[in-house]
Length: 370
Ligand code: PMP
Image (cartoon, rainbow, N blue to C red):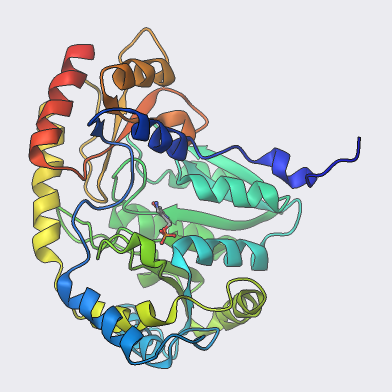
């Protein structure tokens, strides 16, 4: 029989998160700790900006690299924060869009990409599809940045190191000391670091340090979806110091032939979003973080998350995380098994972006199952 599908399709599996998301649709009023997005809505002011742009006829393609004004504002922000003069900026269809373009621009078959484990799912699947090799570096049990292990994992084929802080799925924020140490290792070996900072606003205990402050060869990924609850608007960006301008140029070229541009009216609204104060949302999520941590820490092994909106909890002894997740789902609590984000199946991820009431109900059920 003629093969219809390309070989690369055999290298990816349907997202484990989406599977639980689909299951949620069949449950009656579940406690949904599964999906990684805020439970508040886009602020009215920003919705109005998008509507205004649509009504004003800003519905055509933007420049491939993004709306001129938005890029200017982003460049200014990046320059103020990291001291990069004339940084290169590419506005993308979500951070996922930026990740795909970046990996396409950088990863040759056989190239190695170092990724702390646990990790955000997309990295692994895109790299595999491109024929690259993921080199996972274990960060259990405290999920701190494993600098020494990363250093030991570097070979002549290492192309990139990926950092994600605050981290999905652990909620852990990497310390300044470890980030500086990693910057030193990367500089010594002359390796690019891709830093996924989509959760940079969700930072609860102190500031969230960025490697971009210590290392010029950083590719900075940030987005709008999480901080302003506009995940469906598909907006992200990549920024780089001018020494890595060629990476952004090649990504822009690939964007021309793939996404073409990020959605134009939402780019206009993003300009207003940059000035929008999200501290009320962040304060509310800090309280939810406390609720989940204090509600579970005496019954489960759990590192206190410092950012994002996830907790990564060790499943009770005597079974895999997947088995525990099945039990939780049978009790109406949707959580994601850790093996979706890891080479191990020992933990489960809670996304605590739900009402305090639901959070408490979920905590009570999980405690009963512990
Ligand atoms: N990086 C991380 C760490 C994420 O958690 C997500 C979304 N879950 C993304 C990137 C992709 O974000 P976007 O919706 O902007 O494509």
